[in-house]
Amino acid sequence: MKKALLILIASTIYTAASAQFVAKMEIKEDIPGICDKNECYALFPGFKGQEKAVCPVSKDSVLKRLNTEVAFLKENPKYKDKGMIGLIINCNGKVVQCKMDNKTKSPELDKQIELVFNSLGEWKTGKLNGALVDSSELFSFKIKNGKVSFELAKKF
View 1 (cartoon, rainbow, N blue to C red):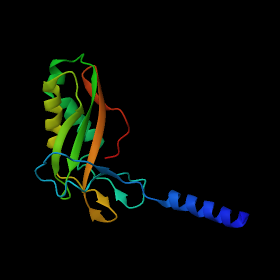
View 2: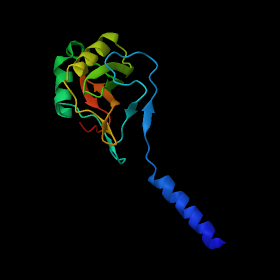
View 3: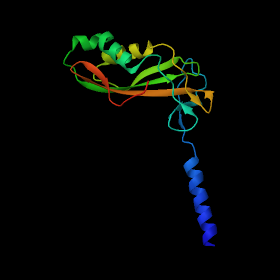
View 4: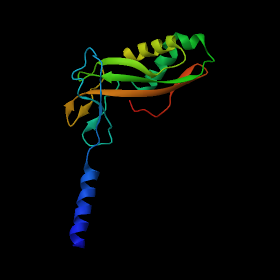
């Protein structure tokens, strides 16, 4: 009896440990260009079968563009703030939504940051179990002395 119970517990733990975590987004609005609003994912490359969308330029290039192209920061060199921008990349590698999730204190700054992210080009599409899928990416950033940096090490 103990052996059967031990086998049952071990098989339950094994099944739970090998289960794949997949975060599916709930999209309530119509987003032009999205392939399937019911199948949009936040992908985690550490889990089997998941490949995040990949930005066409490096993290350093994005930071350089933010710090040179965002006029608000040039005009406010002592500005300090933080925020988060969310992107949805469709199954064809196109950014179909780019908007601030945690807005800064300046709507003008938010617009200028969105413009930079919208102009990065075509992404390598995210995959789930080998299939191209719509996926989301979040980028947390902080601004200190008018310069943008990413808060978390983000692999591009």
